[in-house]
Length: 257
Image 1 (cartoon, one colour):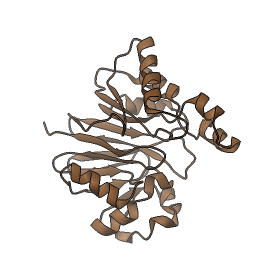
Image 2: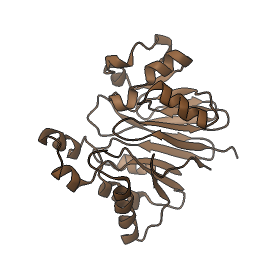
Image 3: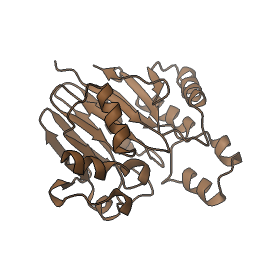
């Protein structure tokens, strides 16, 4: 059985980028940090040749580096049609041959990887998460969720390794310095999942095949890594659920299986 690797290169309000790969195929989900930072992270992974980048949505913390990476390495970029229409100008020109559409429920096959997009509720043009699989291994990236639909739950139940959102502590957000309209946006059905919501989601989808969970997309203003970890862990304990969790980019690790 071929080894699959999963590594959150960056995860948070300042940038998001996740590496998923096998011996022969290597992809990024989002590239919301500079090309230089991505290259540095990839060198630590023994510099795999990236096959493609899959974009979840057009917000800057998810697309900052896609133009640079596309132009520098002639990389195919996959995004939903409306995401392409709403990319910020700061991304720069992406040559037409490198621009590829993906729509929800569509699967793209790259050598030994199958990558399927699925709808997520977020305040973007046409946002998606991704379910990635080989013949025997599965992984998923699901961040920037205002809430969790039954469809998303069913998809995530099939993942062995998972990056999910644990964006904020509700009390920190409500009592913090953000303006009222931004607090309302984050707490809305097209905003972000709280630590408590992430814990409840994991209780709902827990099953023996789930090997590891990364808690990701933590707010730098309205969360702390230890708080996110403790909140989710406490919810799992109360519900007598045992899962292997870590906080992406704080106490995470390259996961191989």
